[in-house]
Length: 313
Image 1 (cartoon, rainbow, N blue to C red):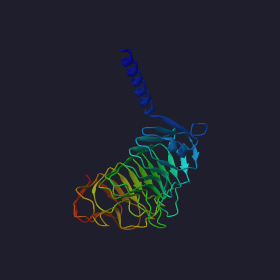
Image 2 (tube, rainbow, N blue to C red):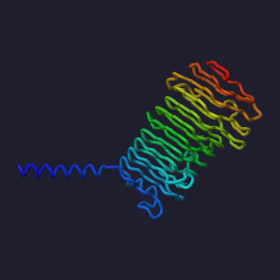
Image 3 (cartoon, helix red, strand yellow):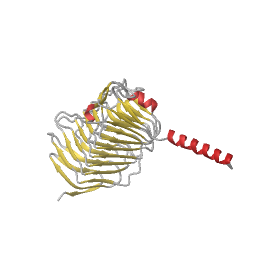
Image 4 (cartoon, helix red, strand yellow):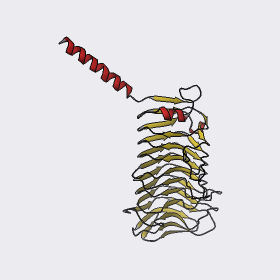
């Protein structure tokens, strides 16, 4: 009996040690912290960890491989700056783990030789971006991982984009399950689109998407392969320097490869501040677009293609 109790106690102790070893940890990054650079914390991170990056300018890049990982800046987002150095010819931050959250920091000046670099390159199953500033990158966010979910909230995309080689954009999402963008601000995009999505479903809700007086963007929103779309409660503006003046929201122009069950463009404010004619929505799919309750001003027609327009009251 005593021997059995001894063995039970030993096993209980072993299980406690194992459980303790798998608990989430907090990894601090910054001057005088455990890890001086984000890349060092990324190399040490395990599933479920939280990485806290303290204020500073980090000439560094990182590949985040752990699952269920949180990477967050401490304090004001504009005081935690990751800049200039890219990993694997791709991005400042690359996420390969599943269910990664990145929040409250700045990713700026991402450049790579093929001009398709990014602030964040998403290569994992789920990515959540909150309160992140993407400033003067080639792409703000670039991801092509099939079946992934990308959610962006309360973030800033300013001065991103290029068409030096293949075009880069504020956000560019490949064949993902879902792209959802909420309460974010896009401005001064250069030549590319503010948002380009090949996702099965795209939801763009409550954002400001504006060229500004100097922005040279193409479309505000490009949905080139169809898919279900909800664009609601946004404030949008095409500027006088826009390179592609034909339309603000384009759907299906590169061929419809995604099931397009819903096209809802609702309760948006759109202004064309340029001295040219443009289209608010160009629909190249066979699915009827529902364009309703939008406030449109400037030299604009509401819809080209299948669908119905209901004016705002």
